[in-house]
Image (tube, rainbow, N blue to C red; front, top):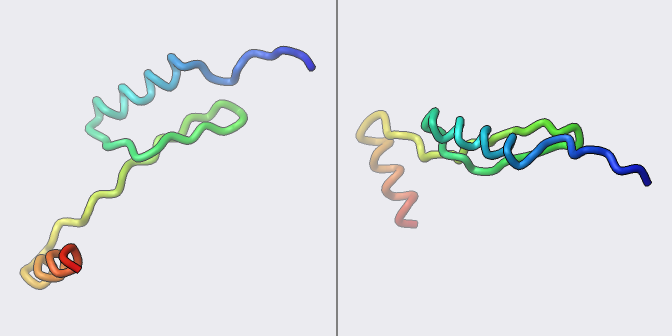
Amino acid sequence: MANRPAPFRQADLSRALKAAAAAGLDVGRVEIDATGKIVIVTAKEAPTPQNDLDDWMCRRARSA
């Protein structure tokens, strides 16, 4: 089995995560495929209520 260089380095991942943090993104997970492509998936945030009914439904859902 031949030794071949890794398709990405830790520095590449660190750089990508620092850039995401600088952009204000909340990182949920990171995916790296066999070719070395780095995909940063953001964490989902709860939607902000648009009106009183949405606000009430959100509070009710959280308490259930």
